[in-house]
Length: 239
Image (tube, rainbow, N blue to C red; front, side):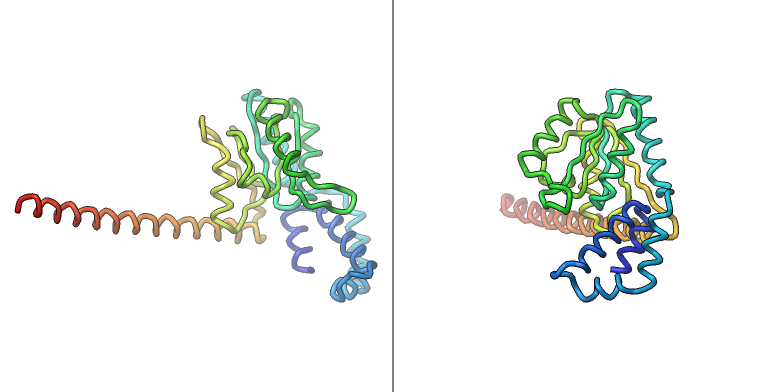
């Protein structure tokens, strides 16, 4: 739980950290709360951290950078469709709210079906409705959690933004695959230097390289097998 809090403050920002600390307090106060949550919340370190987190008003530098990238894209190409991926729903909410202040940006959120305290998830029918309105141009910026990575029919976009890298090569490929379908597109990945963002980025990159090497090996092996079969067939036809 402490490692997760560190991950949030390093790669997501203070709003995400404050929301998580509040959920820890709520969990510790509930009958179903874990002993770990109660031990953390009862410590003097937690209360000091909680108070300091409430006092800090600055947000993660990624947030202003994302707003800048979206603003430039819409200025240069007003007809653009933009998809922003975030790993956490708290970040999704924050990014969507901030991007709503960008000129020409018409923003919608795409989140999973699970409900949270104070907020309901989107049922599958609602998700399909959001995507259809995105395709129709009612929205031109869609901020999505992992639900936008696979399964649902997301329209081809002009720009895909990763608010943070993901450690999975499959998820990274799926995210990037949401652009460049029917026309050229761009991908922007935000990485906080010196944090696990870097580790996640290089992890997925190395896994993808390994995947490509395996595919090349399979291709070579299959090509060799096909060549052997053709030679055998030729000899048989001659006989």
